[in-house]
Image 1 (cartoon, rainbow, N blue to C red):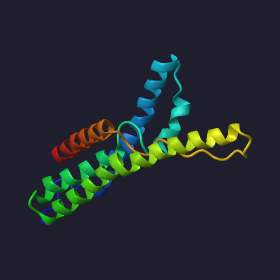
Image 2 (image 1 turned 120 degrees about the vertical axis):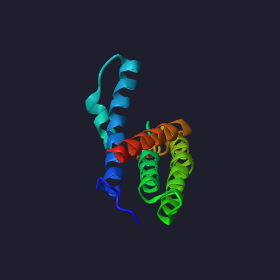
Image 3 (image 1 turned 60 degrees about the horizontal axis):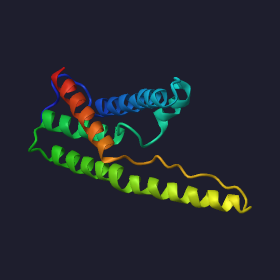
Image 4 (image 1 turned 90 degrees about the horizontal axis):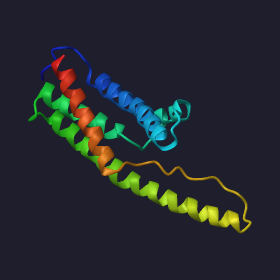
Length: 155
């Protein structure tokens, strides 16, 4: 087994990738709001740093960084890479598939709840709709994760 020559921890780089991409969501949300409303709303978008879903996918970015750096540092034929790749593909599938489906169901449930509220039933809470990712958000997250993996591998 080979220890990375630069001593950077896989866990630290993976956590950094996830945090950086979550911070990007604040910037992306602020730009989208500006295009839509012609006003900057950074404060409103700061909550995005802790929320799942949206552009880009921090899930796919983090696991892409993890499995690529594992391959770079320990070899793409190592069992470590195989484990990281398998884990990463499950997370990416879940982000784009299962969690996105849950978000769509939440949207429909919120519509049903609004209909009941109109007819006089007691008000109830709304479900979070932005949970999963579109395939494009997952793709962008994976590209960012790959770029960060290459950067940290070259350091």
